[in-house]
Amino acid sequence: MRHPPTLHSGDIDWKSVRLLLFSADDAFRFLVRQTFRKLNVRDVLSTSVAADAQTFMGQSPDIALIDLETDPTAGFACLERVRGADAEIPVLVVARSDDKALMHPALKAGIEGAVPKRVSGHELAHRVSQTLKTPKRLPAPAEIKPRAPIVLEKVPPTPVKVEAAAPTPATAAAAPADGDALKRELAALTAKLGQSPVVSGKAPGGTMTGGHGTGSIGGGSMGGGSSAPVRPGGGTYGGADLPAAKGAGGGGLLVDDRPAASVKSGGKLDFDDFAVVAPKASGGKLIEDDGPAPAKRDQAIDLRQDARDQAAKKRAEDAKAKWKELLEEAGHETRTGKDVAALNVDAIVAEHGLWLTSKGGEGKRATFQGMDLAGADLSGAILANATFREVDLSDAHLVESRLDGADFRYAVMGAANLARAELGVAQLRHADLRLANLEGANLRGADLSGARLAGSKLEGADFGGVTLISADLCEADLSKVENLKQSQVEKALCDMKTKLPPGIFRPRKDED
Image (cartoon, rainbow, N blue to C red):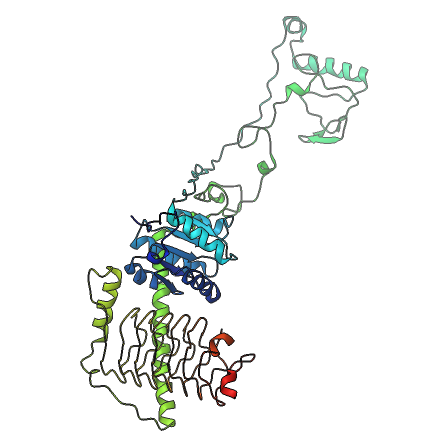
């Protein structure tokens, strides 16, 4: 059974619920974590990196909450990884239900619902609760059949042919036997009516004047008054005697039937002058299906991820060199731990990743408890929920490492480089972080009770929801940290050299 059991009252047993959260919006992640921690959930697996979804899926989350609005590309990449690991897990996406650009591909991937970005914690908990109780997959959008291909065919023009009407017996008997007699008879008749002589629709040099204008025929011209010309078979010409002009399609003339200059040949229009455009998959407006094929889209996502990995590796190398220079300038002597030489970082990270993805069935959890790893290089390593308890990580490099939920209790991390590391909800109780570099690190929800931070670099570090009970902030510079609250500082130990952000003040007990 995928969703957790309910209590006898019908409510969710939140203590058994593990929530997977993806969002590039730090404020939204903080809202979700705070909301569900108040409900005493088992765990909130929070990340802003799509690649982490595959790792966190190894911890068997009960429901996934994926933000598509902040970063749609990363959001859909995370959704694909979640569905690839578990096709049945309930998924709620953060998007407006009327946003077809986001909802259409999300419905095709398979989701159980959508919540808007601006949502209260109470409403969010209610939607997650209802989805866990009765997970129901939303139907995928109906496929629109493509239209038949448009094929243009060149139809030869229909020649206009005027045939004389068959003479009636009476007129046939009265018709002159020779052409000269016919000319004389017509000349006499037209002279009587006030017209110029006309024979077979031709005039040697006159003009033909109709009711609405003048036109030339052959080498001469015809003129006349209001009377119509006489048909050879008798009577006068009428509109029915002229065949209707036909267009290329066989019907009446349209605007598109006008002759145009050929694009390629330069003369008359040829078949090659018609560009046949392939119909869209939807037959109408462009939709997501008209984009790249899924295989190409996956390849593009992988290429972008590889580019991000290379960029992260380069940043880690630059940060390592810069931090080494700063320590040398400060006169700090770095050292290498006794267990570093025998440490196979790649193998340990690989085994740990397999342990996460297989839900503990394969691989091995990374455990470094009690080891001397001073100066070790773990930059960029994915070691979420690893154990570093009582480990000596002095002068170690953990730039941009994934250490969410890791156990660093009583660890020695003096002068360690943790720039931009992910330490969300990590256990750092009584950790020694003096002179450590935590610039840009994510410490949201971490427990720093009793930790020592004197002389550490904290610019840009996220302290949202960090527990600072009895944390030693003496001589620490927190003036440029983010999301630090007065209530957090009230429980910490400060002195006159402690620097805090504007609007945050040292506890009064320390000023007395």
